[in-house]
Figure 1 (cartoon, rainbow, N blue to C red):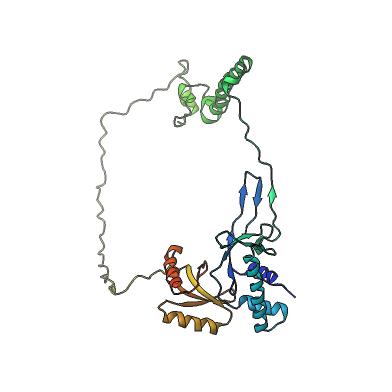
Figure 2 (cartoon, rainbow, N blue to C red):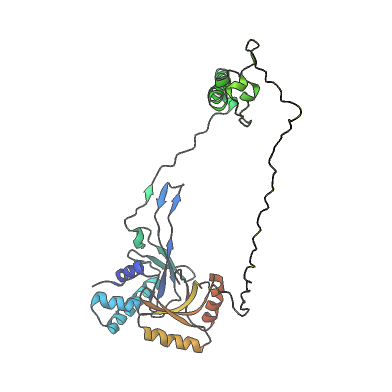
Length: 344
């Protein structure tokens, strides 16, 4: 026979909200992984649990799971849960601590409020199954000694290395630059422009760089006559007149009429926050409960998520927008909680 805390643990692995009738409800929220540099640990992702004493209305999830786990009827399962709740309340009222296996610990503070602390050794997130806490030793940063902390010998050696680098860098640079980026090798002449790496390259041929040798004879061409000779028996030149073709006018382009009544498509932004007043396994119970809430003036919606029919009494774009609906429901003694629905 499965105990009530074991069934609670199994339901919290796959549900976001599990309500214990006439006792309270557990809300689960995903928590990402993080690194604690002070303790030297890497914490895997998990589910963060919160206990809400105002969630007492029976939604049928826990009773049905108890019925299937112990082969009992619905009424027998409900009576067994109610007896267990009476026992838990007696333990808390006596000032003792109530421990739920793999879930957490419940107790009452001096003001009589029930407090809850989650079991840190149990991870309720199925996607993080098998992931454990990783311990590491943080490495301290190595600080280099300041210049004034160096002794005179080290200070002198540092200047020697710096001077060697200042001399070697230009030599290495120009040993690549002059043969590959200039025409100094081809022409045999190095100019000041060749030493400027920021100038635009100018292509110079080998013949342009060679100086004129006075021993090489230069051939002088005879000049052309200043006046042109008269051309006789020349045929008359007729100028050809280009033929102009007539261009037919292009057909008239008719304007396309625009429908002024046509409206641009609207984009609907999904409303992701819902104020949930109840979760039911049976859809008929959800519809009946929704009709009662509609009669009280709420804008009720029902939708199915993770095998449950949830009744929403209002929604909005942010959590703050739905809090006002939750306050109105609280004034009418309607227990509710806020659901962030990612995939609408």
